[in-house]
Image 1 (cartoon, rainbow, N blue to C red):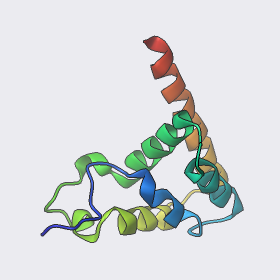
Image 2 (image 1 turned 30 degrees about the horizontal axis):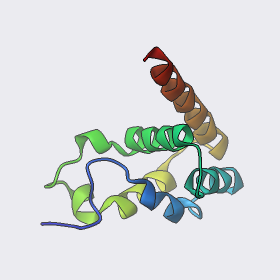
Image 3 (image 1 turned 90 degrees about the vertical axis):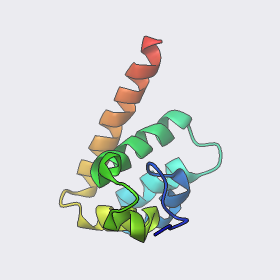
Image 4 (image 1 turned 60 degrees about the horizontal axis):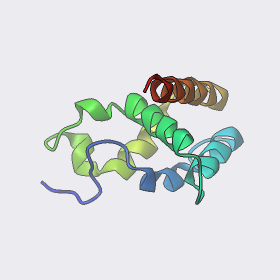
Length: 106
């Protein structure tokens, strides 16, 4: 089954739909990475966060997640995350540092 909302990994176009899934810290992070002119390193770190939390690497066209689409999968992933918004922000900052380190190696 084909779903036009399904991509190979988390698409940034889905990020704005995640704004209301958690508290104020999360909402602000989503707003920051979704705005026009947002830092590409921040956006890359956000994509990495969502890929790791949502298991995008293991998703395939026959999976239930793929049939539902990236938007629904991402919303469910964030709603079910058991840590706090502060934990999510810390993960984002860790992945932001990873992105920065990777880019500085080149």
